[in-house]
Image (cartoon, rainbow, N blue to C red; front, side, top):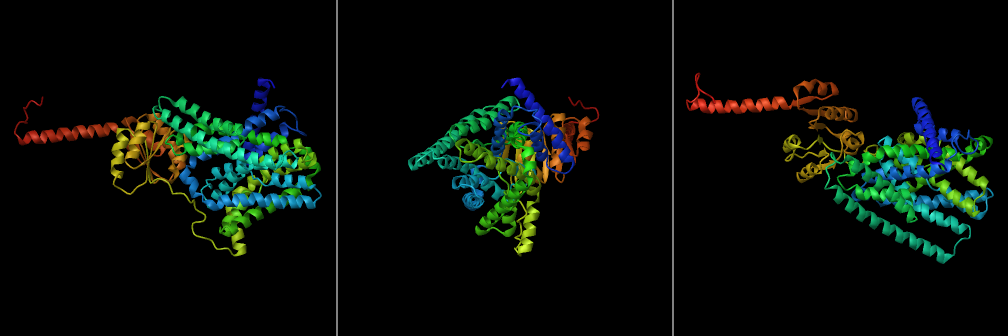
Length: 557
């Protein structure tokens, strides 16, 4: 494929996604639906055939899912991952096994061969990481109980992709018991090697970055973010593992460092572009003509699978001790068929286990379930409340609240001399203080005082979100540069309209700009310097007048 043809197809697909995503957004729908429609219209069977690089775009777009998991991993250090608990991870394993078994039994009853029935169960067992996590992150529901459960199940499902792929090969008669044992052993060894390798590389990279000052070397952190995010996905793929899972592990290992905030912000733009391509490429897999011709079959199977997966996940989490509300909301979030159905289905078709008709049905149902998920995932909390009230389930206080800490009480942006003097009043107080600074040394000083530190450019809203500015009661902006400080102030007011914001102004002429941007108080350097000079001179005069050395005709020189 010629590079310029591929580039042209990518531009056309992104442009169509922009137009249709914007249109659907104006109509109150998720822009994700517009991206899927754009793919269905422009490429693949039964479309206008404007985009002909569907395979190449799909390969590139898979990196979007990897970067989504990488960004998520930056939020989850090992300590935070432990807080997910064992139960949701166990729930993920049980859900996959039950869904495979029930799906296989149902397919067999409808006339599929035993091997194809098992393959069918494997394809429908996984939910969509790209759809669910993207929407939960956008709605700030990832820290709610149903969001945490969904995350744990999706991580488990990502780990299950490789064993299910091995299962598909076995169904084709491509391996013996010893082959299976070797495949599983190799998988575990490669996974361990990958984790150790990523851990060592992250340690080395953080040590190297620690010698840099980000405001002088911003391009290096951008390169580091892209290399780490995409490199970890490539390493996992080469090890025979899920690229998305490898990227998550790398992000999680890096998440404990002070650079996590800025790395997440640097990779966000590329992640958005690649995820948009992913959904467009997913749309290109479907054949709209085939879907219209077999709409009754597609609709029936989609309904049965959606309700069936919801019921399985609800039952699993009810058995694990979760409330009806949380179990129902989790089930609705994960009731769709995931993108890995394409991967497993492709393996099944190539090996002869899955017929082309079954694969076309799975692809169509997956695409339709993507559309449904765009509407259903936002409804999951209300759905959980409704089911709980119908079944008489008890509502536990705090179930509808995020389970993580509420964030900092005070955020100080810029930790030079002004920021450090400001912070002195909080050292002895029982306040949660977060410091954001581009200088690694400033963040180190903040941590020595017992504050939480993050290296990052506060003009980027991703940095402020990662630092949980939205939960802050007060924000202090000590950045000396006028335009930079105003930009930060505007971002802060959007994220935390309730917060009390104090801004530093080097010159009195800029005070009105800060007030107009939403600052509650502006402390000017010129006024502070003038007051300090006046206080010093007043003390000197008082001391000298007492000694009789200062009078109307005295020489003050």
